Length: 426
Figure: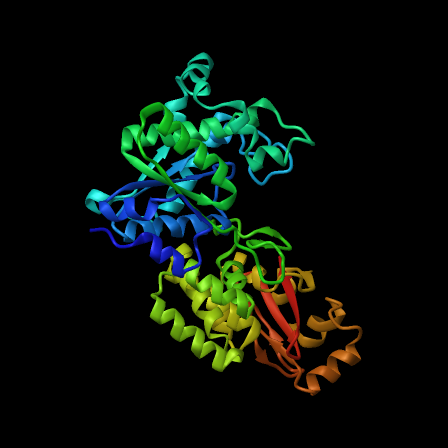
């Protein structure tokens, strides 16, 4: 008997809408269910993590998760939640994106565990040979214009306008569900709450074309307590790909969650049990300054997305910026992580020859770099024990040599606790 997938999602606050009969159907026997992922970029972002975790819970409950990457629908563009039409991608770009998304999903889902192994499908495979006439004959005739116009994703765009391409999207997605129901015995489609209209179009198409039962479950769209958009920073989306968002920045995103958001996120984005989470929340409320929830959340999600080694680097990088650390910690950072930690820090460039013979601290602070206003200020700060090189306190007689270089190129100079400068040696 499968475990109760719906009850698991309910206590985690992960259900927005559910079609009657879904829970009973999923408790009868192992079932296949799917979620569609949009391959308009070569990486998913953390907004997709809610749906990934939904599939993870589906598989843990004993069911078969199917991840559909929309190689065909990516060429059309989903109007749900959009105020304007998106750019359409060419086939080569889409194929590249599909492969990248596949690799990311393999970190979460088990594709080799027997009967309920996860499976990946691409709707381009069944749409590429279908003609337009075939589509409007076999699909379009089953769904009325009135039915399609009643959908929120269409109604919200009636004033600004919508192309026929986008209008037809719900039929295309509906056919995906029909195809998977017929060929993979897929009985449930899962997705975000903005997908409800598209999903029920699929259940309707299945009912009208084959008479089969099909079900729908949607999750709430995640909102931050302060009203700002989840998964966004000043720099844009928080991506799952380390080249787009460094593991350090990814870790920091979760670490900087508010107390209210952390209580919500720990249920949605980790696999910890109800008992574990209740204990963590209780512990956190007793000593919120320790940020137990945020640290647990940041470590858990970063480890799952980027692996243990990258998590350790992210923790080390955080210690460098906010706590006590050593030159060794600094030298363990990659160039990318080094600049992620010290983003926006003033920089100056000197030649390698100048450091080869040893660079004195006055020159390093003012004469050659302009970090401080004058030699006099540099001397005062050095006498006051306020200056450090690579996190180690130094005096006026200290000399910077090539052995102090981080990544064979950088020196970190600190003044007090909050001011940092980067010396770039070229």
